[in-house]
Image 1 (tube, one colour):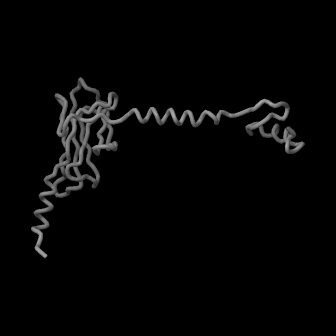
Image 2 (cartoon, helix red, strand yellow):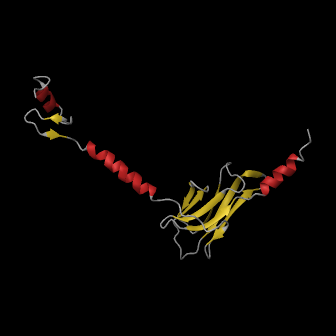
Image 3 (tube, helix red, strand yellow):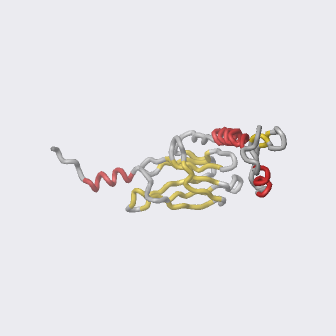
Length: 163
């Protein structure tokens, strides 16, 4: 195979960073830069990520022995809450608070046995919160956002009038 230009070898030697693809001008050996391994690496990474499905809690509300976990609504604001936890010293302090039932989202992480974290204005009544051990993936506790806000909102709105 002929080079496209008689100056191809000279141009390539000017820029040592330029990778050579295809047949080498001096011979027919193929040279690559490892890009053919990228799809395999992506596939293996995706498969490893799929294995980390969240472990279900036995029931909600739930707490392992010695674990305290509460989701308390902010007075006067049903869309916000304060999440508080206390885990015994014998358990791991690498904790994660996850929100949702099926596809849980990480809300907060902590390296402390005890703490509290305020939420934003996104909490809905009966929304599930999970306290998870980050090392093992075990659910240490689970709680639902308070549904008393629903009743309070209905009282504020008053009874529905008939059409």
